Image 1 (cartoon, rainbow, N blue to C red):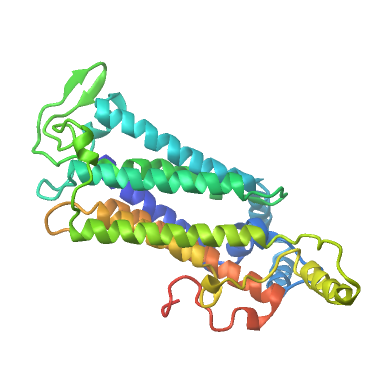
Image 2: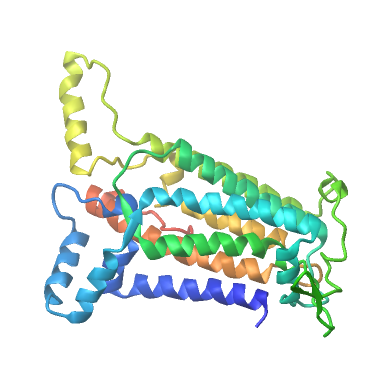
Length: 356
């Protein structure tokens, strides 16, 4: 099995795992929610009552006891930052490997095959790599800048999947730039298997590969979508970080009652407020929708030359992003409804406008 097939299979297998957890109630209530969505309010929500009922009905099940034990294996939610550290680190490592045709690159090239007639150009590799680096760097900055002290935790599998995803995607943005070749002999070089006739191997990277020239329509549209989606996501993240309740500075007498009412409402909602940013008017989680658009833009910009419209490896990564964030958006919708009432989610799409 070659590297490209392994990457695609890994993304799809991870997507299936997330779907399994999301669709089976005993798994969903134990493993899916993380961060703020696990925070309990002063009174149990309908979702929490449902969870309690399920727990009670399975109280003597050995399997449920095992699931509970697994659910207790968690890591701090702040470890989310490590995802973007890994993303940036692998982007820099692969840049070095591609430029020097280093040992890691040669190892991957030895086991990567692709359609000979459909391969990414060296410039596509450079653009896709740069876009992923920008995405990882921005998210790392946001994680550090917007982070608030929290005791929230997440299931360890969330963390493992995140690390695996960003490790794989660091490769996925360039691996289809290795041209598929006819069977050729493997040779030993510094103890590693290498193979010749690859598109990226045959190319010498230079400043010309990142020179600003007129892009084709697909590249222009993809980069524009990436920029717009990144801006929307950043705005949403900054706004959500600002929702943390802050003490009002010396309220006047006539505003004390109103402030107290707001404080009581915020307390009843576990210290969280309902977003009223325009981006949240019709979407439960517009920052998740933006994330999907970001990976859609990567899938488009890295589409191999020829008749291909998308990069299939990154397309599989996009499937994982959509499934994972879709499941999380569904949990978020339940959380909003439980904390703020049915009106808080009425008329809002979870992830894809006019679809779901």
